[in-house]
Image 1 (cartoon, protein in one colour):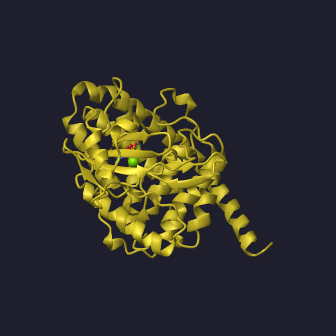
Image 2 (cartoon, helix red, strand yellow):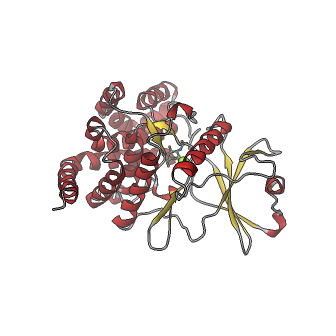
Image 3 (cartoon, protein in one colour):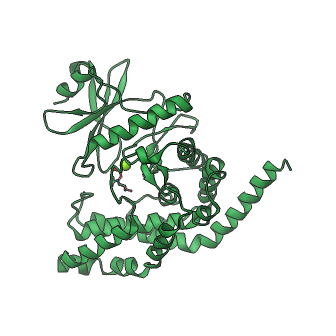
Length: 361
Ligand code: GN1
Ligand code: MG
């Protein structure tokens, strides 16, 4: 099957080794390599991304803009085929893209120290910063309502109506937690109604394994750009909180391992603000801490909804997998809420530091 795709790029499949790559839940990714060259081949999950061409258009426009305005910026766009296409519909009816493999890069699934967290936050902030004057009306929504918490809550309520009795029983505690945190949805509704919260070019999937690092933990570039589209900065910062603060990730079954590392909050704030501090409005900044609550809560709702819907979206590697993931996220949410007073202190401290630097003290 790969022969038919790779031939479009002038590659002969018999000369390359092909193996599954990465840990994404939605698309299928492979590394294609021979002794000299390596590539990343990715099949777009078109039951999730209904219009793969929208992704392609967005990336082409952004690449062109960045090439013109910031030629040194490493933006990993898909390669063009022999006929100039950056997306190929293969014989199996699926859509594929080929990316260059960035030599000397690796991804991490767990953050051991704050340096990598800081560098990742700088990268995500820089991306939105560099595209601050890009005309977002040119971009397609590759997934409509992707981080719309109102819709995610509605989908959860719909799942409650249709779920099997047994599943409702198993998930009773998590359903209670989902309802108990409804004020997060109210705050979300408040800020989306506020005109000072701007739509910007947002990555929408800031997990640590979507950043490529070199051996010194410097962040080289961002990958997994399918959800790059207009959105709120809260999505990117919030998903960093969701995935960087705890040493254990969303797959962890032992809830005692889910703890909040406040020094990682500091790294995210400092890193992101070093790029976006001068761009965000004062109103936007007020929601910085809220962003983590919003994204952790949303992911908890999404896993719980999927459990109730028989795992149609995320799939499951074992019975109850998505319920465990939901439990995990609600535990993280609880820890996050408890740490809020510390987060506030950290923000005050970092702001003072930054002010002192700008005033040359
Ligand atoms: C999905 O495919 P992946 O792993 O990059 C999901 C994200 C979730 C994440 C949870 C398009 O991302 O929104 O945060 O799983 N992407 C989509 O691990 O639904
Ligand atoms: Mg993704």
